[in-house]
Length: 130
Image (tube, rainbow, N blue to C red; front, side, top):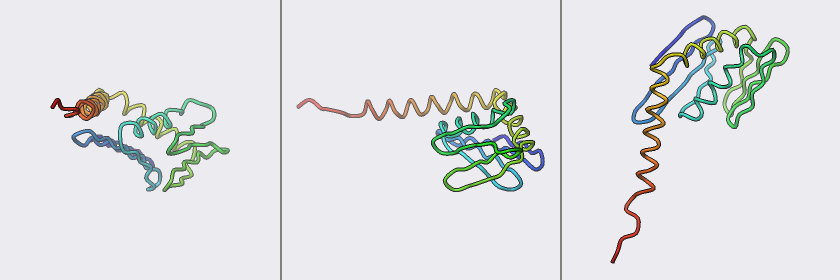
């Protein structure tokens, strides 16, 4: 687990076993989270646009759209208005997170575990000779 706090924003990255990742980004007490390697990866991508003049990111499970000085985050359960400065601080925290070799190792281990599980299911007992 890695947690970074910079009021009013925070980031929490958790690794569960055998193969589960969870990322929670919080703005002014409102959490935005992703569970699973694919969703966590997409949330990370959405919060790497700090250098862009306008934030815009549409994904299957969430969207980020900048309107004026506010970035609107929306998913099935949550709607958050994020001041652009807070978004930029979260983007900096996400950049710090993905630069951590332990986080990279957690992603690699999770991908390997998921591949092993998929292979085991595909190569299961199958047809038997009679």
